[in-house]
Length: 229
Image 1 (tube, rainbow, N blue to C red):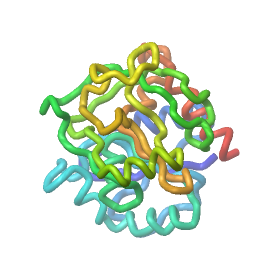
Image 2 (image 1 turned 60 degrees about the vertical axis):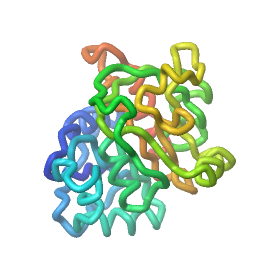
Image 3 (image 1 turned 30 degrees about the horizontal axis):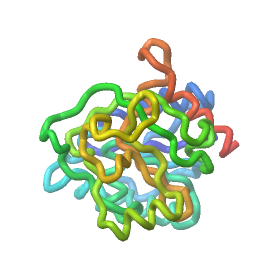
Image 4 (image 1 turned 60 degrees about the horizontal axis):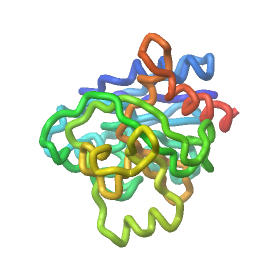
């Protein structure tokens, strides 16, 4: 599987996600600079975490208009899978590739700790490494991770099975306490209509090696590689 990782000024998780992809695929992903206008032939496009353009104006807003994003939109429209993690999720919502917006955490503080996620839909190339309702533990690192959308959009996401992950407690219960950033309906990640684009705030790439203290994110990347093989 060939993957391309988009790098913006302020990206800081590109190496983490490249390491995770290499562990699962055995191949080194390609780095693509945001100012480029073309993408190489690739099976997967990834927008990593960080602070693209310093999060000026609004998280992801400036990055969504970088030259490479025109090509990302075109590839996504043709069915190439696109994954956005943390800041990448913000970029994808600002680019119109995913619904909703990411607001400041309800605590108004930067969150950097492990969370539990419940897999809501395992029937996608991104989540096929898990079982539906499985609970995993992965880190978060964000200030603007509060997913928001109007009720009609949230109902549509629910009805079409487009919610990928939700914040939960260790037993899988969708509690208010487990939803630290205040996301609507505990939503941590969503798909587009065809489930070929996924955005999520937590960082599965930082839970793929025993040295990271947890490997619950490894099946995420193993599943993607198997689905695209």
